[in-house]
Length: 199
Image: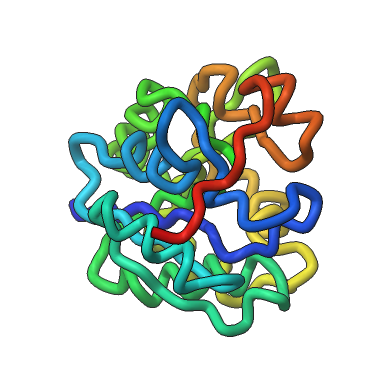
């Protein structure tokens, strides 16, 4: 079974003052950290979907050995990036979908989602303290529903419409730790580090 991972890194990061993919954490960028955490046994390839400041983000990710997909429609919402990732991962049997603003996800969580997909789950979702987190795993059988989803609902709409498809797996607290604002960064990481500049 081929499983690829897709990091969603196309957004503007307006509340953070720039692309969250380039924020620093532990000596690496959010994008590099997510790529490293997703590159687990059973994961074939990691793609990054970029959009806003695509060239700058791709320069950073190139050092992390990522494959890139440019989503020219990123301003139309996250679902467009998910669909761009599905196209890039066309050879896969399943994909892990992970937003770049969740760089604290534990490798054990990723492994649990991969294992659920290998057991035959159509959709595998980690949860912590009763709340869903990331990455979400989507077998090819669920891709048609993603492609047909309403843009304003995205993957959440698919989960809401098909609860019978979901295998919930135990996730660590990092699966819920989204960093969307400076306050989130200070609470979860520490003093805000300057985004890594062009190299």
